[in-house]
Structure formats: C-alpha cells, structure tokens
Length: 268
Image (cartoon, rainbow, N blue to C red):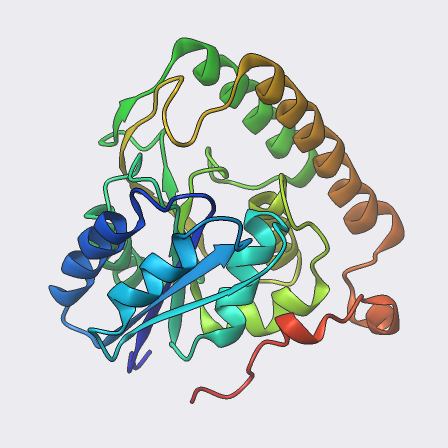
C-alpha cells in the first residue's frame, strides 16, 4: 500500500509534570521515520495543566496537535477521539507515561510493512521483547490472554499493550461499531476487526518497564477493581459479538453514534 502519512495518537490523563518530555521523546522517534507523520495528543479530561502544557509544546510544530475535552472518559474513548481527528493511511497509538519505549513505534511499523498487516500489536510475549514486569501482573496477564483466546480465537498472545498500528480501512469499518471506552477497548477493536475479515493481525516486540507505583499502575484496591471491570467488559464484548451479532452490518441501526467520534472516511 502507498503510505502518505502516519498518524500516532497519544492519550494522556493527569500528566502535567511529564507530558512535554513524553511528547518530545515520541516526536523524536517519529521524525526519524521515512514517512511524514502527525502526532495527536488527546487530553482525557482537562482537570490539571496537562492540556495547557501539551498545547504549548505543540505550537512549535506543524505536525503536532493537541485536542481534549473537559471530563475524563477513559483511554478507549480518548484513542477513538484522536483517531477521528487523524488523516493518516496508517494510524496507531502509544500510551503516554513512557513505560513503553517509544522507539518501539519504528519497530512496529517495520513489522507492519513486512507482513502487509491489517493490524500490528506490540506484545510482551514476542520472543525478543524486553520486559520488566511484576510477577503478579504476568500471572494476571497470562490468565486474561487465555480467556481472550478462548472467547475470540485471536491468534496473538498479547492484546493489552498500549502500542498498536492499524490500516485506515480497518478503522473505517471497526470504529463506528465499538462501545467500550475504558477497560476492554483493545480486545473489542481486535475481536471486531478479526470478525469482519481483517485477520492479518501480527505481533511485534516492545521494550517495556512497568513496576508497581509507576505511572501506569494503580493501588492494589484500584487494580482489583480494574481487573474485575476488564473481565466484565470482555464478557460483554463476547456476548455482543457471538450472541447478539451486534457488530454485524445488519445491526447498523443499533450502533450508538457519537458525533465526537465520527471517523473521517476519506484521507485528508
């Protein structure tokens, strides 16, 4: 496929102290790619100075954009919001916070081209990934991925890493059907895409250092609530996909339309 532009979405929440450094590191990686890029930072709730600081950084560059909204709505919503603003032929996202090394973006794109993929997902279980991960999270992650394989038959071993790339045509088909805005967003995207025939989904290595107490971790009580919510959301995706056939074209009238998430069909 001809690649004219690559879009990268960076969802962020309450990161006024780190957002400028994070965006700078990501942009440095994108500037080294052989394709034009755009960087879109989505502030998921304007409750501190994250939006102001990110906007100040973006003013220096034509290919950096900052968008956001007043109320926190979840990472999945933020990513979809950013994708609705994007113009790229290939569109991806990376979590802010730098637990994930942004150099992995170039690695994922190399795999994208090599496999002629529909979707490339960063994976902790790729044999050459560099992973610093608490053993508690490893066990929970393995159990969750077994559940995902059992329910949806996805052939990748890790659906939850916050670094993925998609062909634009995949998102044009998938995004209008989605409902999950928080915990099982990644699984819903991948399961629906696979069900619609976009089966060229592959994994790429990442470099991740995630420890309890870091920017992407929660207190034990919050973490358990998050695990439970992910479990419930995942079962709900299975019910809609396999029982109700909610995501099929014949149920288009039932899809919940949100004008803020109206994805542009034509590349701008």
